[in-house]
Length: 231
Image 1: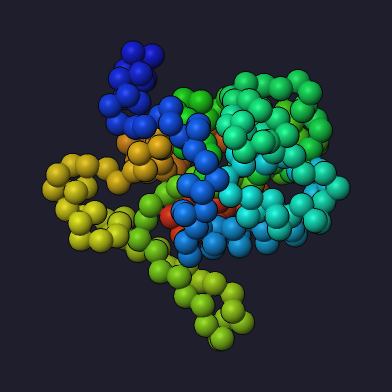
Image 2: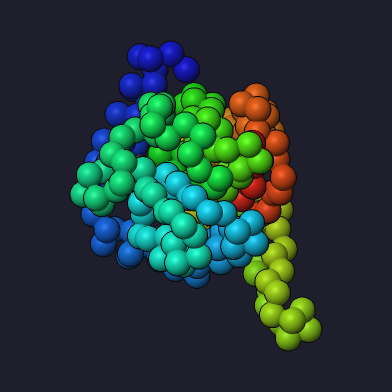
């Protein structure tokens, strides 16, 4: 997508600029069961990795930070929104030399979709540069698919997810809007989501591998996909 098309796309389809001035209450209001399940998966996976120095991209609501910070030696946050008082203020697409090779864990949960898909590689290359050898990046990106979450005593309380056919997206209203009216189900602050607007998951995987990351783990969570990447 060229610059003129990208500018038109963001100005007509998304409230692109306002997302960088949102307050903490906006993220708190967005906490629901699907988000809690995402936090559960992130915290469980990061805890099993046992990092010492963590960098989180995007302050959000601090749920992951509040759970992980007591378990690590250092926890820093990079965010473009100064209202969140992050440790580092800046755009994740801009490389910060002072962060190079400083962390063994980078967390980026539901952030990358807030920037054009064309910036995905640039972001991931920066994350890779901030990691020590063998470090890991924990990434989630929205992927709206119909899924059923099952938790039963027979599975020892371990959640089990069933992925429904691709056309099952949610309510009858969302199906009508997508398949009859031709509208895509996408957050007004998102530039893209997995499998929306010609961004299939294979393209995401291709970009990931092109940066030098190895995909250690992949999970289909509720409303998001979750990658664990190794430097």
